[in-house]
Image (cartoon, rainbow, N blue to C red; front, side, top):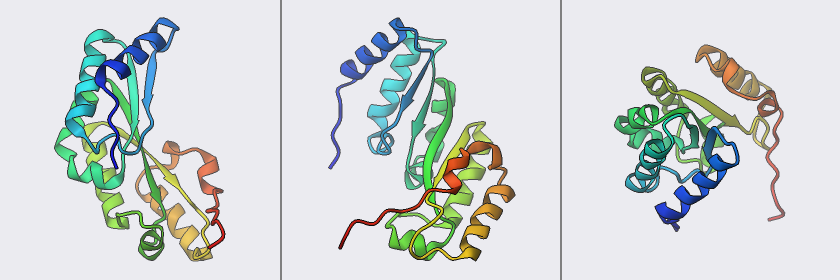
Length: 166
């Protein structure tokens, strides 16, 4: 279920943050591109009010693919990077986690984002109950092969999936 916060409310929050000295805004909801016209309208209006303000957004891999032609609008409006939950390079693990994307999708996103001049900051769940040593090495190889070494925080290579009972 998607819950939209009215643009006026978000923009008023941004105005308050800028008044307090903010120079960068993070749109941290992974459903940021679930309502693209709404999200882009906020980003564009933010840029009109605060032309020097930069931003970043959290966007799901499947939304980055679906809305690939719109990524340039993020760049044009001061977006410096996008965080996205890549999680694993093993497609079987991705299915188990119900991520909705594949290793090939992640590679496509990396290429697309680079073509737009927009950095991708993947997040990983490096260890799951299904992860093997070769899976972890494959994840590290993917990071290196796709030029992502500098794009992630070191802690991303130590995160473990916590499974609740049941």
